[in-house]
Length: 357
Ligand SMILES: [Zn+2]
Image (tube, rainbow, N blue to C red; front, top):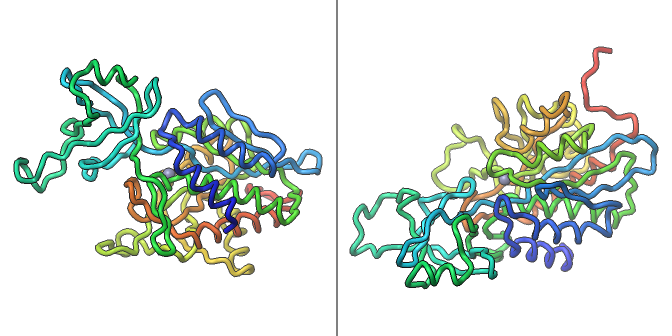
C-alpha cells in the first residue's frame, strides 16, 4: 500500500466520527478523493459523495456506499460531584466498557475521561457485565461546575481513545467498522485514476451518515442520487477465532478476501458479475448468507424508490463494536481490486435489473 494511502487511513481513523457528528471526517474524506473525482458534495445531515462522471452521455450510475459514522457514547447526566453517566450511541458493548479511556467533544474542544472501574476487591457482582446506567465516567473533576467549565454538557459525544496500530500483518483500531470501507471506496477512486480507467458509468462514491442507528443516511442519499446499481461496503463477522461455531455463524476468515452476501436483498445479477470477475482475475472472495435482510445499508439502498439493484460486499472483521476491531490489509487490497475490476467491466448497455424479455 502506498505511504500516502496509509497516512490517509491513519488520519481518517484518528478523526472521530460518532453518529450524528460525522462532518469532520467527511471533509477529510472528500479532500482525499477530490483529485480522483469530478464533484464532491454533502447533504443536510452530512452524508458525503464524490462523483466520477462518465464521458458517455446519459450514462447509468453505480453507487459504492460505506458508512462514515462510528459507535460511541453521549452524556446523559452530570452529577453534582462531577461524574458523567452516558447513553449508548449505536451498539456500544457495555460488557467491555469499564476501564476504558474516552475522548469527549465539547464546546471548548476535546476532553478526556475514563469509564470508572471499581476495583475488583471492593466490587459486588465481580463476574457480571454492568448495566448501561451503572457505567460512570470520571472526568478528573470534583463538581458539575468543573465539568461544565471544561465545555461539557448533556448530549456531548465521545468515542474510545484507541487509535490504529499494526499487530503483525493486521490492523487494530476502534471504528474499522466502517471507516475501513470508506477508505476502500476512496482507494478505489485513486486506483481508477492511477490506472487511467475511464468508466462508462458514472461512479458515485458515498460515505453515508447514521448507519449505526438504523441505516438512515443511506436512505436519504440513495433517494437523492437514484443510482442504477449499488454495492454496499460494510464489515462482517470473521468467525475464525476460538469459540465460534461455523455451523451457527458460517465460515468467514480474516485474510481470505472480502465476503459476498447471498440473500434476498442482494441482487443475483450483481453477485454473478462479482463472482465471475473474482474467479477470472484471481481475487479471493468468500460467501456468506442472510435469510432476510442484511443488517447493513444495503437494506436501505435496495428498497429505495422503485427498487435499486444492490448487493453487500463485506470486509471480514474480528471483535466488531469494540476498541480492538481487527482486520487484514490483504482483504482491503483485494476489495479495492474487485471493485476496480467491477467498474472497469461496466458497459454502457449493462443492466442489473430483471426484465421479462
Ligand atoms: Zn458498519
